[in-house]
Image 1 (cartoon, helix red, strand yellow):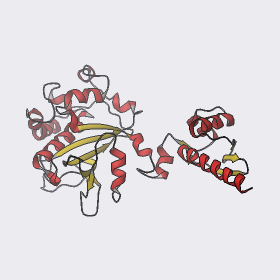
Image 2 (cartoon, helix red, strand yellow):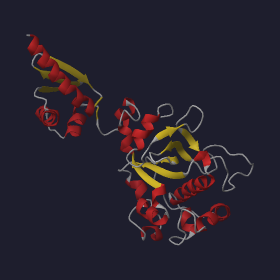
Image 3 (tube, helix red, strand yellow):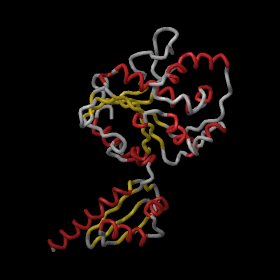
Length: 298
């Protein structure tokens, strides 16, 4: 994505109307551990900040111009397996945090509602990070950072990450919703400045890579059992039936220990594990066309 803006557009298309992706840094369409150009919250005691350390940051950021001409900065945070327990109060640190962020939370024009939960309960993770990143997005937008007219936060969150969604550590949190996402929607003042993206969007090789999709995707077959599960089949004939229904493949399928053999007439091919299910679906009609050509040549 750093070098190929089309991958950014594909990845975030379901939650953002991505137009022309712009360079956010010289020679880069995506940058990491983004903190913005200004220390809005006085987080640095030395006057200098380090990306990803002791200051509010996001995992990545990119810049684009929407189809209607708005320049938008997108802050991306990735939550893969995180979960959180109840925080132990720390008087000294909590006073510092209140001094830095509480005025921004209590600002009636700010992005977070201060009338839903008291500030002290916003210090519990994951809300503490959510609040800080939304405050950062708001201040970046006000400042027109990177030339942006709008700034939003996108959370990349696996749909199956129940532990993250269940990180409601206090009764006051649970009284507002059944999940972190539900509670956060109650807290955020402008809903369109925040979006949640299912991490399965990154299982597309056209977004990340084939290797990534094989490693993390649920559409990868690493062995016979995995293939049967992915295709909802019980045996070889079940795979044949699925290929016939989905891509009109009228051939034979033989499952072996190290891969799958597809046979149509005099044409055949072997696909070794691991592979993506989509690759099998693409190969089957190609093989059928090859068999048809062989029959015509005869």
